[in-house]
Length: 301
Image (cartoon, rainbow, N blue to C red):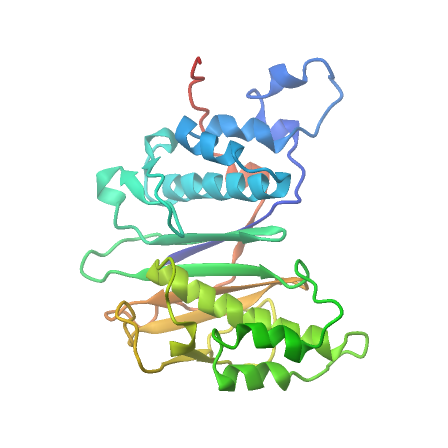
């Protein structure tokens, strides 16, 4: 099952040359200006999506969400032979937007995640009605939430309802491989790695709340965290088994994007056993992301 794996670093400056002639009129007063606000890219999204983005108070939140929406449009345009402006999504609260139109693409499985400096998308590039696939992805910034003034034991005790005893032990036993980093940093990396795996599975299942995370237990067999994707992590489902959770057919792919960010992809299919193959994630720049983009008509208010 071919999959797209896309990543975008939100700190890339948006150059005028990437979006001309869309924003030329907005920068005419300063002919030497080459970097433009990403808010100019709102023109590439329908009004319903724009309204939701404008509700966000923090600039980085809006930037991540905006890039995520652009990646979804770019993914369907690139891999499923549809026009940028033909894509219609609903506004329901979910871990991912739901495609309403075109009708024949409604069963394409995809998922998106953003945290810290990165936005990641995973999606089917081919569809098979006879073999439905669940996909989930999560990215975590190790450094965004610093734990200060408390021990790891005190910090992790707040999450005892989410992790099994075996997973808690895995965090506690993190080895220190670099003397410039503390044992706390290594334990936190293991914590976020496990959290990332659990979130990817929750998103694949598309459940909102009330899911008992302790019923799923991850065993990380490959200790080395590298940019080369790891496929050896396995899952065990404990009783009482959640109603929406199939036990069979799960596989996981995880890696580092950089020294501060890890990601995990969860995939489930009973029919296919080789959905994830360890392919490297594709890192996009603005030119690649916007190559098929088409501005929406301006709606007069």
